[in-house]
Length: 173
Image (tube, helix red, strand yellow):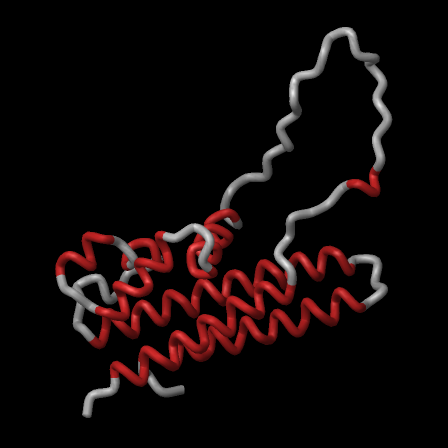
């Protein structure tokens, strides 16, 4: 493999695609551990998408020879301080995307960070003390807010198109 910065980004985007394919196959399967396989592949896809985003940040930082070119996390590069040091249009666009909580980039960063948080029990609303102690529970109502394969693929396509667009602009003529 060539030792160019873009190769890591490409590799991570490809790995995310493989994880999404495996996630789809696991979801279609009837194995006893199908849910666990889907969750494992979802987390793998998130991990690789974040790695691809970091790789793209490294490409930009390397091209402009930023001192943060070897940052170990996206959050260290997508800051106002880095942007204030030198005006970089690609970095400015990524910082803007990272700041807006509804964008795919911000959601990816938050989702990746959540992978490293301990599980927390859902918060229960305080109830009236005069309510009966036994309450009926319907297990079918348990809806999970897990990311869908389609949403992760959408993020992958956004990242891929962003990388291609940025690379076209970063080419030295």
